[in-house]
Image (tube, rainbow, N blue to C red):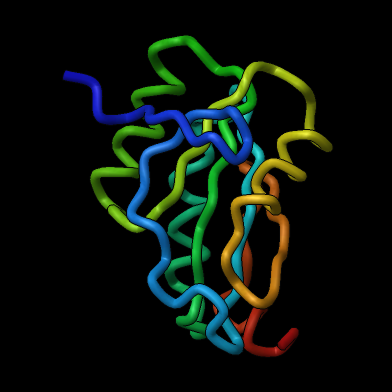
Length: 129
């Protein structure tokens, strides 16, 4: 039984999610993380987002065509640890299309992008917003 992927008609891509129930709520931030072959780093990246002092956050990871077991396993571990993460999988189209795909699925009033091998300071979003 594979619950990791589910087709969405909106973007013709695959994802597993409970959608953010706060759609349209003021001050929600959607963090879009394009992901390709960075399984070694993505857990630390996601943890830095969840460690932020700004708490109205939705995390969207766009898997840009990874099919190898290691990277998929890393995404599944993140999904298990953080059930609210949206994970969208598409064929490999590159960084800009992966970013746009994530932005199209975002429900936050605000959107930001974060590379899958970067981390943020805990006060980064609260100071920026």
